[in-house]
Image 1: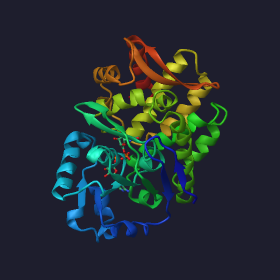
Image 2: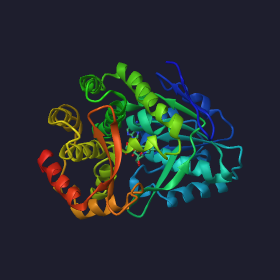
Image 3: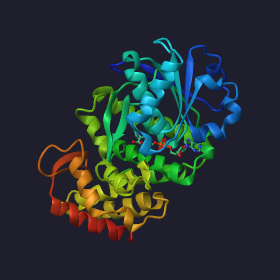
Image 4: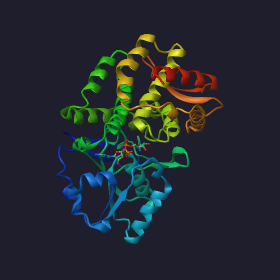
Length: 357
Ligand SMILES: NC(=O)c1ccc[n+]([C@@H]2O[C@H](COP(=O)([O-])OP(=O)(O)OC[C@H]3O[C@@H](n4cnc5c(N)ncnc54)[C@H](O)[C@@H]3O)[C@@H](O)[C@H]2O)c1
């Protein structure tokens, strides 16, 4: 499949699409390469990585609690010990967590070194690998530290998805749905999106859907790489979604939290008369609820933690809360800064009913 060239204010880069893992051999031969690999991925694909010398290999725990400056420092330490200089290349292999940590290191070490990213989750392949963001968590605050520094090359091989758990696979589905909703004329093409999502498990379709999702994101970042305007709309589902990741202590993975966040945002639209009942119910019944795909517990939805997290949202500007909502006419998505605490609480109660909690 034809590669995708992404323009960036930092450096342009290319996404290469691969049907098997033979391309990995090229990296094993690179002299100045240091590998940063998700521990689980390393175990599952050990055979592919067997030629990496121990002193060139660093394994990461891909858990949110470790997407922190502490893990970044661990990598600095390792690289310092290796006498690594500006001419090294970091080869990062894993999901969004591995990407965020490696990207942060690559952007800060010697004010920027070369890095290559090989995403191994659905979310990282379809969404996070492009867009330049590197984000770290700080205390209970999600993604509040970071910058912009894209990989120099990306290699997407959907064959990695075969070993992904259902929960992690559906985490990616949440973001794919979001981009499709942002792209398609709302609500006319909802049926197309429903069909597309239903076909996601077919291996033959995955590469095509990943590329399509990526090209929607590419359109937005082309004009707003640094997230000062249009790109804000990617936060549809994320304002409440990030809060839910906190409140569930990351038991709900990112993309599934985003799916639930889109239901939450739509309740706000519906209550404000900005979304018709028909569209609201159809989206919930046919798109969001069938793709949550994990057992939810009421304990994941602590109202106080959710409110505190929404208050801490980095996009919040005023006294009220900020949320990106969808509107079922041509405006599609819109950031609003006037969600009152009472509205937050009423929406929360309606959400629990929809989720049957
Ligand atoms: N930088 C960005 O632009 C951006 C965008 C969206 C999300 N994110 C971040 O990405 C993170 C979520 O990333 P994610 O969903 O890609 O996954 P992840 O990195 O959290 O990994 C999820 C789980 O899947 C495992 N795994 C990874 N690849 C596997 C494979 N091929 N087979 C079996 N198991 C595998 C991991 O070990 C882990 O247990 C969040 O921290 C989110 O904030 C970043």
